[in-house]
Image (cartoon, rainbow over all chains, first blue to last red; front, side, top):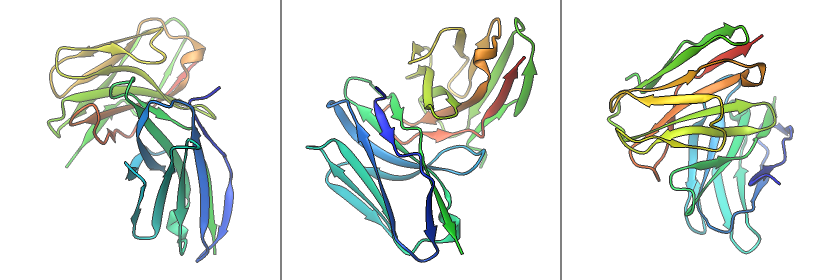
Length: 111
Length: 112
Protein backbone atom coordinates (compact mmCIF):
# COMPACT_ATOMS: atom_id res chain seq x y z
CA UNK A 1 0.00 0.00 0.00
CA UNK A 2 1.30 3.46 -0.89
CA UNK A 3 2.06 5.83 1.98
CA UNK A 4 0.22 8.66 0.25
CA UNK A 5 -2.67 8.00 -2.13
CA UNK A 6 -4.41 10.37 -4.50
CA UNK A 7 -7.13 10.11 -7.10
CA UNK A 8 -5.19 10.58 -10.34
CA UNK A 9 -8.12 12.33 -12.06
CA UNK A 10 -8.31 14.12 -14.37
CA UNK A 11 -10.77 16.49 -12.75
CA UNK A 12 -12.25 18.49 -15.61
CA UNK A 13 -13.44 21.83 -14.24
CA UNK A 14 -15.20 24.68 -16.04
CA UNK A 15 -13.49 28.02 -15.63
CA UNK A 16 -14.90 29.79 -12.58
CA UNK A 17 -16.10 26.62 -10.88
CA UNK A 18 -14.91 25.06 -7.64
CA UNK A 19 -13.02 21.79 -7.47
CA UNK A 20 -11.92 19.78 -4.47
CA UNK A 21 -9.99 16.58 -4.06
CA UNK A 22 -8.48 14.55 -1.27
CA UNK A 23 -5.32 12.75 -0.38
CA UNK A 24 -5.07 9.96 2.18
CA UNK A 25 -1.98 9.03 4.14
CA UNK A 26 -1.21 5.86 6.04
CA UNK A 27 1.59 6.91 8.38
CA UNK A 28 0.06 8.03 11.67
CA UNK A 29 3.40 9.68 12.51
CA UNK A 30 2.86 12.17 9.70
CA UNK A 31 3.34 15.63 11.09
CA UNK A 32 3.52 18.13 8.27
CA UNK A 33 1.61 18.22 5.04
CA UNK A 34 2.07 20.13 1.82
CA UNK A 35 0.44 20.61 -1.52
CA UNK A 36 2.85 21.00 -4.43
CA UNK A 37 1.87 21.98 -7.93
CA UNK A 38 3.54 20.42 -10.95
CA UNK A 39 3.04 21.64 -14.48
CA UNK A 40 3.60 19.26 -17.36
CA UNK A 41 7.25 18.24 -17.60
CA UNK A 42 8.27 20.82 -15.01
CA UNK A 43 9.54 20.64 -11.46
CA UNK A 44 7.18 20.58 -8.46
CA UNK A 45 6.64 23.89 -6.71
CA UNK A 46 5.21 24.43 -3.25
CA UNK A 47 1.62 25.61 -3.35
CA UNK A 48 0.69 25.48 0.32
CA UNK A 49 1.82 24.10 3.62
CA UNK A 50 -0.80 22.51 5.89
CA UNK A 51 0.44 22.42 9.47
CA UNK A 52 -2.54 22.22 11.78
CA UNK A 53 -6.23 22.30 11.07
CA UNK A 54 -5.78 23.71 7.59
CA UNK A 55 -5.23 27.06 5.96
CA UNK A 56 -6.33 29.31 3.15
CA UNK A 57 -4.33 31.18 0.56
CA UNK A 58 -6.42 33.24 -1.80
CA UNK A 59 -8.55 30.87 -3.85
CA UNK A 60 -6.93 27.80 -2.36
CA UNK A 61 -8.01 26.13 0.87
CA UNK A 62 -6.33 23.11 2.41
CA UNK A 63 -7.89 21.07 5.21
CA UNK A 64 -6.42 18.37 7.40
CA UNK A 65 -8.44 15.60 9.03
CA UNK A 66 -6.15 13.68 11.34
CA UNK A 67 -8.86 11.32 12.57
CA UNK A 68 -9.51 10.03 9.07
CA UNK A 69 -5.94 10.65 7.89
CA UNK A 70 -6.60 12.75 4.88
CA UNK A 71 -5.99 16.25 3.60
CA UNK A 72 -7.98 18.07 0.98
CA UNK A 73 -7.41 20.91 -1.45
CA UNK A 74 -10.19 23.15 -2.68
CA UNK A 75 -9.78 25.60 -5.52
CA UNK A 76 -12.42 28.30 -5.89
CA UNK A 77 -13.09 30.37 -9.01
CA UNK A 78 -10.84 28.13 -11.10
CA UNK A 79 -8.58 29.78 -13.66
CA UNK A 80 -7.18 28.25 -16.82
CA UNK A 81 -3.76 28.67 -15.24
CA UNK A 82 -4.78 26.32 -12.42
CA UNK A 83 -4.51 23.39 -14.85
CA UNK A 84 -1.73 21.25 -13.40
CA UNK A 85 -1.05 18.17 -11.36
CA UNK A 86 -1.35 18.66 -7.62
CA UNK A 87 0.93 16.56 -5.47
CA UNK A 88 0.06 15.71 -1.90
CA UNK A 89 3.13 15.46 0.28
CA UNK A 90 3.66 14.54 3.89
CA UNK A 91 6.54 14.56 6.30
CA UNK A 92 6.53 12.03 9.13
CA UNK A 93 8.35 12.46 12.40
CA UNK A 94 10.03 9.12 11.83
CA UNK A 95 11.33 10.06 8.38
CA UNK A 96 13.48 13.10 9.20
CA UNK A 97 13.32 15.46 6.30
CA UNK A 98 12.12 12.86 3.84
CA UNK A 99 8.98 13.91 2.10
CA UNK A 100 6.55 11.25 0.90
CA UNK A 101 4.83 12.17 -2.31
CA UNK A 102 1.55 11.08 -3.75
CA UNK A 103 1.40 10.37 -7.48
CA UNK A 104 -0.69 13.50 -8.03
CA UNK A 105 -4.17 14.60 -9.05
CA UNK A 106 -4.54 16.15 -12.48
CA UNK A 107 -6.81 19.16 -12.80
CA UNK A 108 -7.87 20.47 -16.20
CA UNK A 109 -9.70 23.79 -16.26
CA UNK A 110 -11.66 24.35 -19.45
CA UNK A 111 -12.96 27.61 -20.95
CA UNK B 1 18.31 34.11 -9.23
CA UNK B 2 19.16 30.59 -10.40
CA UNK B 3 17.85 28.59 -7.40
CA UNK B 4 18.54 24.91 -8.09
CA UNK B 5 20.22 24.00 -11.36
CA UNK B 6 20.70 20.54 -12.87
CA UNK B 7 22.79 19.26 -15.73
CA UNK B 8 22.24 17.72 -18.16
CA UNK B 9 18.58 18.31 -19.03
CA UNK B 10 18.38 15.19 -21.21
CA UNK B 11 20.54 12.10 -21.49
CA UNK B 12 20.36 8.79 -23.33
CA UNK B 13 22.57 5.97 -22.08
CA UNK B 14 23.14 2.42 -23.13
CA UNK B 15 22.80 -0.35 -20.56
CA UNK B 16 25.99 -0.60 -18.54
CA UNK B 17 27.21 2.91 -19.17
CA UNK B 18 27.90 5.26 -16.28
CA UNK B 19 27.16 8.92 -15.79
CA UNK B 20 26.93 11.62 -13.15
CA UNK B 21 24.03 14.01 -12.76
CA UNK B 22 25.05 17.38 -11.39
CA UNK B 23 23.04 19.60 -9.06
CA UNK B 24 23.90 22.98 -7.58
CA UNK B 25 21.97 25.46 -5.44
CA UNK B 26 22.76 29.08 -4.74
CA UNK B 27 20.39 29.59 -1.79
CA UNK B 28 22.89 28.59 0.90
CA UNK B 29 20.68 25.66 1.85
CA UNK B 30 21.97 23.00 4.17
CA UNK B 31 19.98 20.01 2.93
CA UNK B 32 19.86 18.53 -0.55
CA UNK B 33 17.95 15.63 -2.08
CA UNK B 34 17.75 13.45 -5.16
CA UNK B 35 14.39 12.08 -6.32
CA UNK B 36 13.21 10.09 -9.27
CA UNK B 37 9.74 10.43 -10.77
CA UNK B 38 8.07 7.65 -12.70
CA UNK B 39 4.54 7.64 -14.15
CA UNK B 40 1.95 6.73 -11.53
CA UNK B 41 4.56 6.44 -8.77
CA UNK B 42 5.07 9.92 -7.43
CA UNK B 43 8.50 11.20 -6.51
CA UNK B 44 10.67 8.75 -4.63
CA UNK B 45 13.70 9.75 -2.61
CA UNK B 46 16.97 8.19 -3.76
CA UNK B 47 19.49 9.84 -1.43
CA UNK B 48 19.64 12.92 0.70
CA UNK B 49 22.25 15.03 2.42
CA UNK B 50 21.16 16.69 5.63
CA UNK B 51 24.22 18.90 5.69
CA UNK B 52 27.59 19.24 4.05
CA UNK B 53 29.61 16.11 4.67
CA UNK B 54 26.70 13.75 5.30
CA UNK B 55 24.66 11.56 2.97
CA UNK B 56 21.98 8.96 3.67
CA UNK B 57 19.92 6.50 1.70
CA UNK B 58 16.35 7.20 0.83
CA UNK B 59 13.63 4.89 -0.39
CA UNK B 60 15.27 3.65 -3.62
CA UNK B 61 19.10 3.92 -3.36
CA UNK B 62 20.10 0.73 -5.18
CA UNK B 63 22.17 1.39 -8.29
CA UNK B 64 23.08 4.94 -7.29
CA UNK B 65 25.80 6.76 -5.41
CA UNK B 66 25.99 10.36 -4.33
CA UNK B 67 28.59 12.93 -3.39
CA UNK B 68 28.04 16.12 -1.45
CA UNK B 69 30.94 17.96 -2.98
CA UNK B 70 30.44 21.12 -0.93
CA UNK B 71 27.50 23.04 0.47
CA UNK B 72 26.32 24.04 -3.01
CA UNK B 73 26.72 20.83 -4.98
CA UNK B 74 25.22 17.34 -4.71
CA UNK B 75 25.86 14.86 -7.51
CA UNK B 76 24.18 11.55 -8.34
CA UNK B 77 26.12 8.79 -10.07
CA UNK B 78 24.84 5.78 -11.96
CA UNK B 79 27.69 3.31 -12.09
CA UNK B 80 26.12 0.82 -14.50
CA UNK B 81 22.89 2.11 -15.98
CA UNK B 82 19.92 -0.23 -16.37
CA UNK B 83 16.65 0.28 -18.30
CA UNK B 84 14.83 0.36 -14.93
CA UNK B 85 16.64 3.64 -14.23
CA UNK B 86 14.86 5.37 -17.09
CA UNK B 87 13.13 8.21 -15.26
CA UNK B 88 13.04 11.91 -14.58
CA UNK B 89 15.48 12.88 -11.85
CA UNK B 90 14.92 15.91 -9.66
CA UNK B 91 17.34 17.52 -7.28
CA UNK B 92 15.96 19.61 -4.43
CA UNK B 93 17.28 21.66 -1.55
CA UNK B 94 15.93 23.06 1.69
CA UNK B 95 17.28 25.36 4.33
CA UNK B 96 16.67 22.68 6.95
CA UNK B 97 15.39 19.08 6.72
CA UNK B 98 11.86 20.05 7.74
CA UNK B 99 11.67 23.07 5.50
CA UNK B 100 10.20 23.80 2.13
CA UNK B 101 12.03 22.03 -0.65
CA UNK B 102 12.95 23.81 -3.86
CA UNK B 103 13.35 21.67 -6.94
CA UNK B 104 15.59 21.89 -9.96
CA UNK B 105 14.19 21.57 -13.51
CA UNK B 106 14.95 17.86 -13.74
CA UNK B 107 17.04 15.53 -15.89
CA UNK B 108 15.22 13.22 -18.29
CA UNK B 109 17.23 10.02 -18.53
CA UNK B 110 16.57 7.17 -20.93
CA UNK B 111 18.52 3.93 -20.67
CA UNK B 112 18.28 1.67 -23.72
